[in-house]
Amino acid sequence: MRQTPEPGETTSVSSPTRSLTIADVLRLPVLVAGLPEVVSGERRLARQVRWVHVTELLDPASFLEGGELILTTGMPHPEDPTLLRAYVDQLADIGAAGLVIELGRRYQRVPADLVRACRDRDLPLIVLHREVRFIDVTQTVHALILDAQGELLRRAQRIQDVFRDLTLHGAEPGEIVEAAAELTGCPIVLENLIHHAVHCAPAGRPAGQVLTSWPRRSHGTPTPDRTAQSGPEEWLVTPLEHGGSRWGRLVLLPDEHDRPISPEHVMVLDHAATALTLARLAGHARWERDAHETALRSLIEGRHRTATEARTRAESLGLPVAGHRFVALLIRAGSRTAQDGFGDALAARLAAGGARALVGGLRPGVTGVLIAVARAGAWEPVAERIGRVAREELGADAVVAVGPGVADLGQVVRSFAEAEQVLEAIRPGASDRPFHVTSDIGLPQLLYALRDDVRIQQYVDRRLGRLIDHDERHGGDLIATLHHYLAEAGNKSAAAKRSGLSRQAFYHRLRMIERLLGHDLESGPQRTELHVAVMALEAMTGRSPEVLDG
Image (cartoon, rainbow, N blue to C red):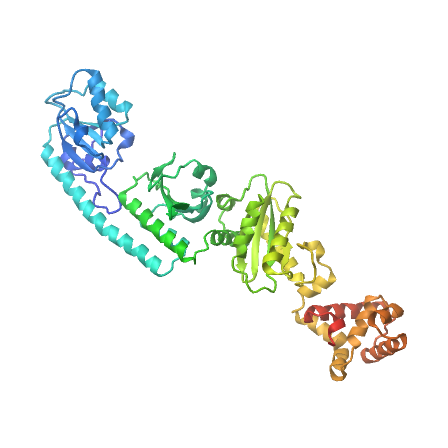
């Protein structure tokens, strides 16, 4: 394959964002004049050139460190194919960038055994068909390398300043990851130890594309001991550690144009890793809860651009999608004031029990949960467990509301909407059930949900206003009397016994109620209207009419 750049064509090697590569060197006029031809290692032209050596020695590996581009005329090369292969093996083993041979002095054409040996080791072999001055090549390339190193030092200072400022200003992990992606122009993902993508900065790509099949791809990428490329996709991976204990990792995905990973990329990930560790130690970064909250809000608000993006984001956080149903739950905190850490505690308890869920705070006092189950009825034990944890952590008056199961992530918004309706309808402390569903919403619960509606308040005032005023002026108990009567479906004897009054005293109060309201308490429709008003009053005040006079 002939690599013949046009005369005068130069490469943008002054770019501070990448190192000098073999492809860059081949585009330099000083080498273009030699009519370079790549005969081996065509896929390795993106290798970094750390230095250039001119040598005719047969054992150059003794003074090489790796990354060097070797220039030779081939004068001392042996004829023996075994010795030629040993020479190539030395260069490949030490990590030489490539081998450049100038034709004319020793060879008129490059030996087939040498080409075969280079191809077997995937070592770039470049043949120069015209003579060039090697000293011009070394001076030109070394000047560019030194310039790039100087610029890299300046860039390193700027990178350090960026992450130092983020740390000093208490940046959240998402901000740190976004900064790393902006500096490198590549997608960056922050993972926890179980390969969940806690934060993703896609660097202009669709997030769904970056996170496609994330758990599988991530599990197939080993974590190196320090920042290095790893796995079949050659991700740049940085382990996140503190005190000898690993708590996650930072992953950079190469850009779509196959530009090589540079020392600057390594620097950015190393500084980002330090900033993330400091943020974690500072204690203000909530890590996985933040990621789960963002994912839940995106599902509830329909912010995903495509169904694929929603699926890949959920899967990257450990929520299985294929073959699963989804159930939304909302937890309203009870009377306990200490609610910090509830999401973490709940998530830990669910994970310990094998439940697959997203957990996050949606607004003050309300936590959202989205569980994935393989079978339609499998959500109930999980909901019971959530109810127990909520009561333990948030108080006995905590409320857990459950939406209907749905078969698609796109329908999750409906499940959360119905769970919200249940949550609004259940009065704290009104039930000892671990969770509530839509079928639990009867008339009292509906009135509780509508207690702030002006029309309900006006209805109560029209039906019971006179009784309320009378009780307030005289310290009476007519509202409680009416409540007992209606609760016993008009059975006066049972109502009198329930109220603790004599039948005569109870009957007297009923006649007073009829006179004040202008209603016939023997009328079924009128009793129904009054019963609704009494239940609405209870919903509005939060107290049973039996104790309103207390």
